[in-house]
Structure formats: C-alpha cells, structure tokens
Amino acid sequence: MQRWRGQVDDSGEFNRAVLVSVAQFVPGVGLGRRPGADKDTKTLHRTLSKLGFKVDIHSDLSGDEIYQLFLEESRRPVKDCFLAVLSSHGDEGCVFGADGKPVQLCRLFSYFDNENMENKAKVFLVQV
Image 1 (cartoon, rainbow, N blue to C red):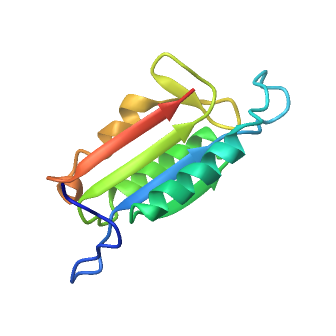
Image 2: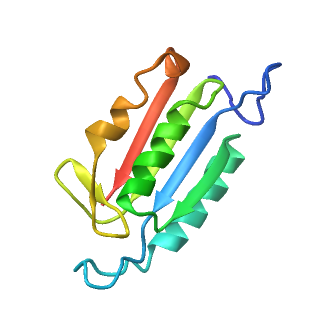
C-alpha cells in the first residue's frame, strides 16, 4: 500500500486538499445555517493533514468565488493526488454558494481536465 504521509518530491510538489464549507448564507436567500459544518471542516483538516495532504480551508464563499477557486486550483501543481471537499446546501448536480447561487459540479470537474492534472488522482467529495 502506497503511503503519502509527508511525501514531497524534488520539485516541491505535494498532495493537496481543498475544503470548501458554506455554513452561513446571505440573509434573504432562503437557505438555513449549517451549524455542524465548522466541526466537520476541522475534523477533515486534521485527518487529511495527518495523511500528508497540504490542506487549504475556504469558508462561506459565494458561487463565483467557488468557481474562481477551483479554476485556480486546477492550474496548480500537485504530486499524486488532488482532493476537494464541497460542503453546503445543494440540489441535483450543484451546491450553493453563500450568496445562494448554484455552482454546477460538472463545470467544476471540467476545470481539472487539463495537462497539469493529467495522470493525477482527482477526488471530489460532496456533502449536501
């Protein structure tokens, strides 16, 4: 079994994880607060860090900010594996940004179909 813990290659690349958690929504969008989201994010951060991932946490992003974040992440180098967690309210094929704007998952996934992510494991976990 391959172990990724603490592995960084000569180029300085490492396995990366991005956690996007939307717990608080803009008033008036009709989506309730998600009180357990912060605890889930902290637990995931601790667990993924122990597995050797460099973990970035982003909280309460708008729909456009989520699109921009994933576009930027898709262009960054990664050693072997990129893992993303999206935690928000959602509907079929989408999650909602803090502004209530739907974020289409297929659009996010399409960003990673590029030369930089070729032959890399890409894992997306969606909790809605």
